[in-house]
Length: 247
Ligand code: SF4
Image (cartoon, rainbow, N blue to C red; front, side, top):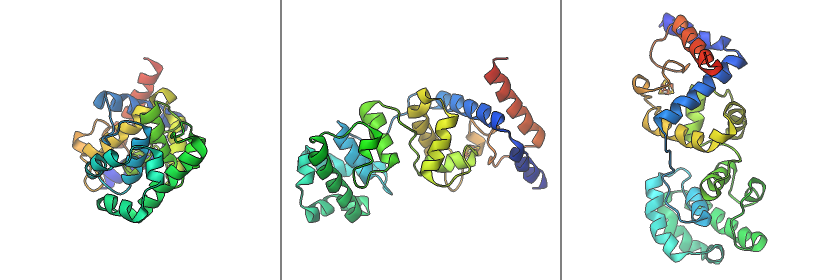
């Protein structure tokens, strides 16, 4: 136990330069582990993606997909949602949880889309953030998967947890975590990195029992439950330095 504590303390001495090298190695390994990351929500256009993403808060993607299968047949345009009966809509999405707030967000966002954006889901971060119920996470999901644009990094509950465990961020606010990650991860990797972190959180770095023994990052993760010695940590950090400098 003492050995493990002193090992973890060794990470406190990580320099910004070492952190950047370690982050680059994390990006590289996640890319290898999850070469073609995809989101699990089903959609055919940015509007469906926006609705599905709003419904996915505190709900599984599987449940959202079940609900949207019927929903998307009934509501085909932002105008359809904007004119929907809220009580009816609440019942239609009830099983996704928090249905009153989600109804306000979906119907409210679509009203603004109709009134201010000619019925088309906006394709910029600034415009998306004017929609009620849409924060940076939802906006990033829509921009990345609906328009192929990288304006930031999606920070959901999985990304937040994994980033904290990897000590890529000391922040707890998702927007601040995102700002930190954007400095550590090259822009060309923003879209995949968010998805890869989500995959990793779902498959390996579980909230309750992370599978550190199976984790491709276990020698460069300050929260690994494997008892790493300070010297093995230094070796891991040095090897990431070497990798980055091309030695
Ligand atoms: S080593 Fe463990 S805590 Fe660290 S990222 Fe992997 S699974 Fe998560």
